[in-house]
Length: 322
Image 1 (spheres, rainbow, N blue to C red):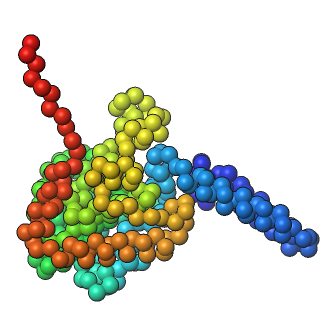
Image 2 (image 1 turned 60 degrees about the horizontal axis):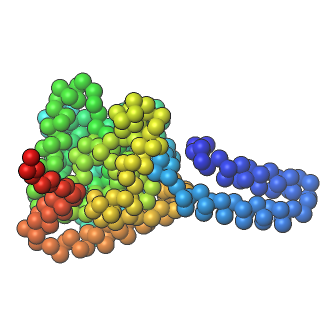
Image 3 (image 1 turned 120 degrees about the horizontal axis):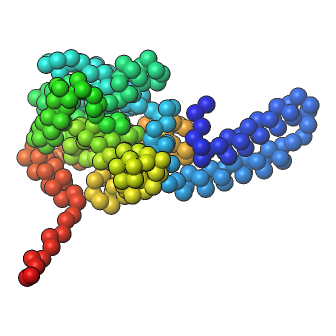
């Protein structure tokens, strides 16, 4: 079982409840009141722990190995998915998947980062860290969607773009920059949802959208907490402090105008009940898509431009007379 450190008290109580149940069944003991008390204590502790999560604890939940990935949501939310491959320049990047699908009655193009469940798949998917060809594939599919007047649904879940030598040689930074420019001009609705990790340019490379949503326990940041801690304090152990400073969770991001809506997750995270989380995500996607479909192409591009232009604030110092 994949148990996070702050969740251990919950699993200790669950183990005690299971032990009492087995003991009562074996020896025919009347221990129902004791089990009831433990269940009440367990429920109260769950609400206390998950209702007061720190930013670092949310990062841990966002990285949970049992958390649903893009392909899981595609299977639960969409139908008729047909995957498309390749950037038509170099290769097919398995860290980014995409293809035609249907969201209820709407034909869409879906694109997302994809991680692996085991070592073999993670190596094949490069742990969700895309190469330049992944970003070029993504923009190719978005432009194809615009050609056929199909909305684009994006799922973001990556620690960051792959920083290896080969990726740099093939123009990683340029590929991401081209996506930022071209996504701002794609003449079709784009809805991006951060479903897990939203790390740096690797996330933003497919994140320029008309609506940016985030799951309750996902994060979206210019850098990982470990990377920030290594730069500021020369010590990755200070990642929990960095997570607080970065203001990377949904509550912070919606105040800054970086995201438009926070999608609730089941108590404990999306992996506790993927079906319920997928239903909430689907409802939000349909609501936002409906509002975007009513806009003309010109209004869509203009509002997307304004959305990103107004993110962030700066102050200009007055000229000194000295």
